[in-house]
Amino acid sequence: MGASLARVLLNQGLRVRALVRPTSPTANLSGLDLETVTGDLNDPAGYAGAIQGARYVFHAAADYRLWAPDAGPMYRTNVEGTRVVLEAAAKAGVERIVYTSSVAALKAVPGRLADETDFYASEEGIIGHYKRSKYQAELQALELARRGFPVVIVNPAAPIGPRDIKPTPTGRIITDFLNGKLPAYIDTGLNAVHVDDVAYGHWLAAAKGRAGERYILSQENLTFKQILDLLSEETGLPSPAIRLPYYVALAAAAVDSTVSYIAGRVPRAPWSAVRMSKVKMFFSNAKARSELGFAPRPVREAFRDAVDWFVEKGYAPAPPKRREVVRA
Image (cartoon, rainbow, N blue to C red; front, side, top):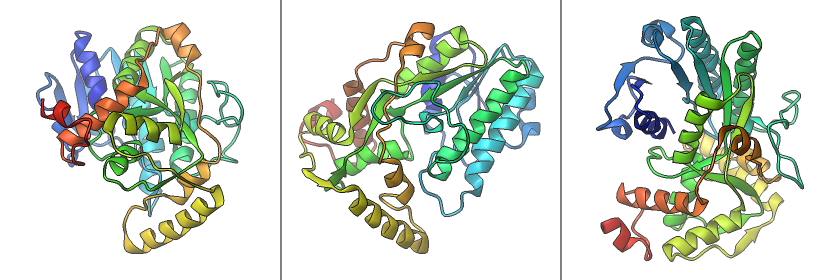
């Protein structure tokens, strides 16, 4: 997301200064006409000077994992890191602070599209450390806004597209599909959106967003089976036909998570992720469309761009329908 945002801001004619950790891979920033500052979110002494004189601060960094053997670093990055960065930006007197939250901080509602008003009243019912950390971080951002600081919150849905180096949990759906590691599916759903549209939504939030407000940056609500069928259409690979019952998937995830913890590896289907899947994560972007002019492209293009990038970078072999495209 950060690399896409940097490109959007440069295209707007802005000068960009990016904070990167000493150990961060920087391939996504290669060739961009920007300045980098090496530092850590929780150490403002290393980057506070870089914020001075800035017009906008975009806080898009996060620890995006649905499973971690030790959740402490996730809370330090997502919660404490957010507080430190936003306070440093507010102290510097910037014109606008855009905080990247997530739809994970919002409460999905069975039977209808959730919107910006569907915020958890408390931590009760929040599943998993990632969702809980993003909820806590958003509370930090809202508190600063209540104190009069120019903080705007954006809540991206599942970003899909190029430059997903890790890959993220969302990107792993695509790489697992390309590598034939998704033999079955569960009855769940999510909202997918092109990562470049999410990035442009950040700029719209800076230019047009109201302080203290949140804006969902989403596009198309799809069941997991619809996502797999779309990937099948784009790649020529078969879509899984076996649907796992929820409790079977939950039991398998519990075993996988336990074994993974002992083995020190990331589970293929984290227990918390399967628990979250019981309610489809479907959201409305009506507010972002009406107030910001947010107009994302068809989500099929996001999956197409993601497939091409993952294949080009060697995450998976070229599938039948993309071989000529990738070579070109």
